[in-house]
Length: 491
Image (tube, helix red, strand yellow):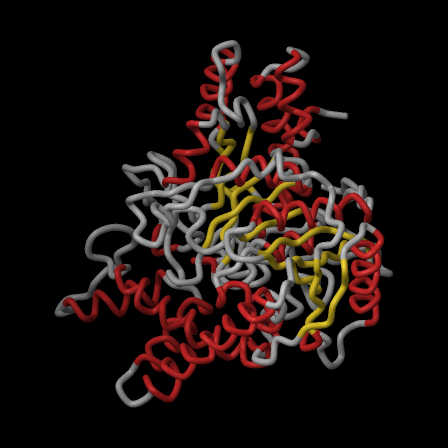
């Protein structure tokens, strides 16, 4: 096994035993990144920074190093990194290099992590297939025919990089499923923490009441290790919760006897592929075999989740993206003679934003406008409160976690849905958006392959602030499923 194929936990142990240096580990990843160019996962490589950090990690090893000392990671392009391009995969931020570090990357560096570079994503995290990026499509390392498949979105570059062993793990963000859906499409683990568990400071905003950063890893144990380093209170983020961060790795006892797992009847969607239904049934059996009690539950407002999400998220996006006007930073359009300030705004935003971002800004501006605020935005906020109440009632009735499919299908081909009805693309989020609307933690775990040989995942949804319990349930599911398949290297 090459060093870049190790999990965080195995690499940590090898580093501690002196069998491997951080420089060796980093060089293995940098070599894999060079070979992985066809995947278009890394869009800003930072080999000099990586090797400097790796050498520092090796020098620190004997002096009580951090939990991630010497571990090479990929960073989604949404996280601001000091002096390194951070453009949210958008032309409007071309050339932007922040003078500050996001709280998450600061915490990772404090824990000793090595940054290999910035990862591809959908523009401003708006997309489910990584086809809206100014860098071009990221490509799924799984390949079963002549097609290039999507790695999912918006954290598609992160998912592809982890699945292809270009890095040991990566950061992602999740506004409506953007960690969990790509994790399911690429056969890796992705967790969206409770809203407020991880600081949003220094992360380019999409929808501020929904966005949450989290880890994308090769195993549940790695997710626990990385989340422990990312989480914690941040006074710079007014939505950051001042709640102690437990030892998530220590919580992986593998014992869920007597725990109650809810199966929501509303997630049995009409037209659900038989393979997804069978996988879900298998997941129920595996958790029952581990001693959990499986109970049917109802989340009656689930059917309203997608429409509510696609009112609230664009509304917040239209507000957040108003700052990109060509005045202070980023792209500025060339102006003709006689053009005024309004012309500059219009031309800059038309040139800088891609079609999907423009679509969502237009929708968001429409639903916030005076004549439609009550009809759309206010109503969506009320629906959101009802969706949260559904989950609250399920947990109050003693449910410890909820098991659902992660996605309505396996990965589809790049270009197959991009030019179709955008609503068809939005349906990829059908199982994931409720978790963001309710602010809950959710995790996608790879459980099997479909008939074509592509990975499929199941989602577990946890109680608020109970990432420790959620990770333990996921650990049991992962162990029972025994998913060890990797994509065949074609790149």
